[in-house]
Each structure stands twice: as structure tokens, then as C-alpha cells.
Image (cartoon, rainbow over all chains, first blue to last red; front, side):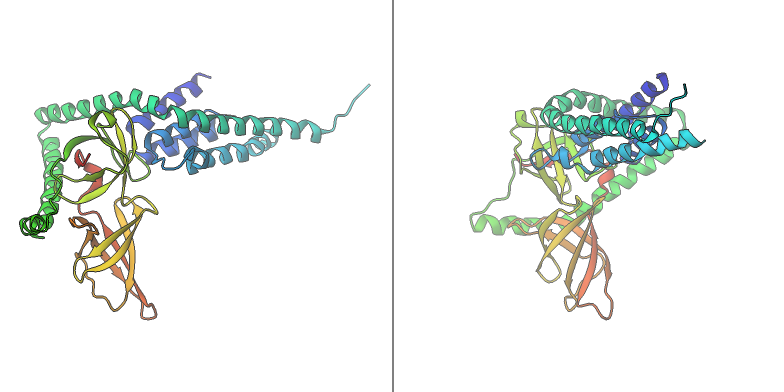
Amino acid sequence: MTGRILWLVVIFASILVLPYWVYIPVLFIGIILFPFFWEGIPLAFLIEVLHGSGMAVLPLLISPLALSVLIALIILLPIRERLRSYV
Amino acid sequence: MKVNYLPKNRLRHPYLRRIVILVTIFIFGAIVFSFLDVVILSIISPVWKAENQISRSLRNSATLFGSQKALVEENAALKERLYSLEAELLFLSMGRVQENTLLELVGRKGQSNMMAVAVLTHPPQTPYDVIIIDAGLNESITIGSQVLLPEGPLLGTVSEVFPKSAKVKLFSADGEETNAILERNDVPVTLVGTGGGNFRLAIPRDIAIEKGDRILSAGIISRPLATVGEVNVQPTDSFKAVLAKIPINIFTIRFVFVTP
């Protein structure tokens, strides 16, 4: 649990001050490392709000980054379960 | 008595439940964050300002300690200055004075009420070609306000405005289309942004174009938008694929001008 919170802080801090090629991989590493990392979705939205261009109405719903995070989380659900079952 | 449960039922339901939770968080987040953007940006803006100040003061104090490091940084600063001067030279070569005189003669004056603003974040901190400036509604900045570099080139337009900050979408943002003119032969072209300060455009193969040619904005006051970086043409193609870039390094922008 502590590791998860620490990772969240790291992602949050990197979103604020580091380049995108640091915080986006760090976000996806968190999704892979921690089970059911739902916090990744609000963090992806935070990236969109802070650094996105937001031209349309509710552009966050079609945000490619947030969608990718959602898809990655859904795909990882069965994969993670299988890895645990057979390893 | 031994009881065997079917594993299928046990497995499918947790997934569905979790997927529903994730989708709910996604939709809820999309709605909440789209309304909270003003609040979030107003909270984060002071952090960026502080970060800029700290990094600048650290840079200055570091020069006192390491001579080698100081030289490297001085080199970087000089490179930045070189980019800036190159862009300025590019702009001046158009004969700005002559243009202003002509505009005054026909009753159209150049915009002079520009405001200098600091850049809070710029690529590569932002994944899209977006910069955030430290002036907003309080400084009469509106959506669509033009943003220029101090050296003259046009950079983008304001896409979102908040009370004390604003987001500027650069013309080089991915998929962004901008009408422009190829200076060499006054041919109207459409620049398509590809991110990272780069553009692509296609022109008929009969039109002459060379590396280093300037591409200007289509308005009455033409400003440099990009310079041609590469021209690709195959013998079978009827169009030339041209790659262009913003005349300065957008990763080091610190100040810009905004027309309110």
C-alpha cells in the first residue's frame, strides 16, 4: 500500500514538472506493477486537463491517453489473474 | 461431502464488476475534470511559477560552483540566443519597415498593443504542442488571441482562457491545419502540424521549393510561420512532400507576445 501511494506521488510530481516522455511511461509502469490501478484514470485526466488542448465539449471523454489507460487496465485484469494462477 | 464449484462463474463476475467500476470512474472523471479545469489550473499555476523561478535561480547559483558546468550552460544559453537572433534576422529580412509604411499608406496599421507574457509550461512537458502562459482573462486575453515569439514569428492561438492563465495551441500541434504562403513564389499552401514544432505540406512538383525557404502566415501582416527543412519527391509522384519547422526551438521558449 505504501509503495502504491509513493508511486502515485511520483507520478503526480512528474506530471507537474517532468517531460511527457517521463510521466506517461511512469504512469503505465504503475498500471502494470500495481493490481487494479484505477488511480491511473484520474491521473490521465489530470494530464489532459493540465497539458491537453481541450477544444471541444467534454474532450476528456475522447482523450486518447485516458482511453489508453482504461483499455490497458481492462486488458490487464485477466492477464494478471492468469499470471498469478500459473506462476 | 466434497463440493465442486464451477470456476467459470467465479471468474467472470469479478471481471465484469471491475470493468464496470473502471468505466464508471472513467465517465465520472471525464465529467468532473472537464468542469474542474479552471480550479486545477489555478492551483497548479503557482507551482509552475515557483518551479520556473527555482530552476532559474538554481541555474544562476550553479554557475558559481562548477566552471565546467557553467560553460555548458553558457553554451546552451548562447545557442538559445543564436536561435532567437536567427529567427529575428529571418523576420527582419522581409523588410518590416517597408511593409509597415505600405500598410499605413493603405490605412491598415500593424498591431502594436502586444503584451509580453511568461511561459509556464512548454513541450516536452506537454505531450501535445500546447504551451501555458501566465496571463488570462484578467489581462484581456481571449480565445483566438494570436501568440507570437519576441523575434516575430507567429506561434499559435489561445485555445482556452482562465482567469490568470491561458492555453496556447501551437500551429504545429498534431493535425492542426494553417493557411500559409510560400514566400519564394507566393503560392498559398496548407501547413499541417505534426507535433514537436514540425509541419508537413504537399505542393505540386512543378513549384520550386528549397531547403531554408520561408513559409509566411496568410494575413495582411505576413509573419514567418516555418522554414522548409526537407523536400521529398519521387519520380512517380505528382506532389512534393515538404517538411517544415518553426524557426526557433520551442522547447526553450520563456516569453511570448500575445495580442489581446
